[in-house]
Each structure stands twice: as C-alpha cells, then as structure tokens.
Image (tube, rainbow, N blue to C red):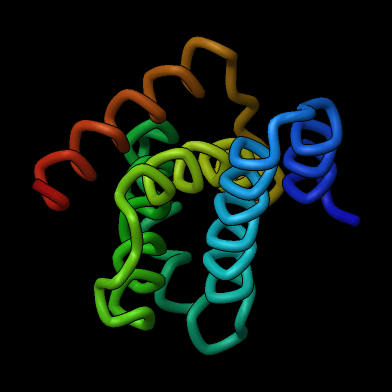
Length: 128
C-alpha cells in the first residue's frame, strides 16, 4: 500500500460517519486513478518535462491539475467537484516526492501548501 492509499485509508478508518467514509474512499479512488495515469510509461514521458522546471511548486500544481483533468475526461466530466479537489490535493505530496527523487530537490511544507493553493485556484476556475 502506497503513502497515498495509507493516508486515505487511515482517514476513512477513523470516521464513523458512513457518508464521510464513502466520500473519503471516493477521493482516494480518484487520486489513485490519477497516479496510475502518471506512472503509466507512456504518460510519464509526457509529464516529465513539466517536472523539470525551476519551481517545484508550479510543477507539482500543474501536474496535479493536468492529472485531474485527464481523470475527469476519462469519466466524461461526470465527477463531483467536491471530490476532485481533495483528490488533487492528495496528489501534490506524491508529485513533490517524485520531483524530489528525480531531481534531488527537497521540498518544504510551505512549498507543498503553496502548490496545493495554486492547484485549488486552477481547479476552481475549471470546474465552475
């Protein structure tokens, strides 16, 4: 079980509310679908150039944004925006970790927060 799966499963296990649990599991499912796209060999080559920029914040936000768009297109835009944004925010950490491993650039918590904020702004403009 990956870090993303572990975080979402832990959150879902900690809640007793069945509606909240179902939503957390849906968010996890969306985020995992996005990660499967990212780690597909053909798609990874398309995302690598985005991750080579000077700014890991911009790169992480852009990769998460594009992944969420691909997931939404695959679902024919039939996804609840209330699930898309939380799923994308889960991805930010994984994308920053990927950038860190690929380029050796450590990221800070502040950078992760900034990437999440940028991603949310971009997503809100798209889903409205």
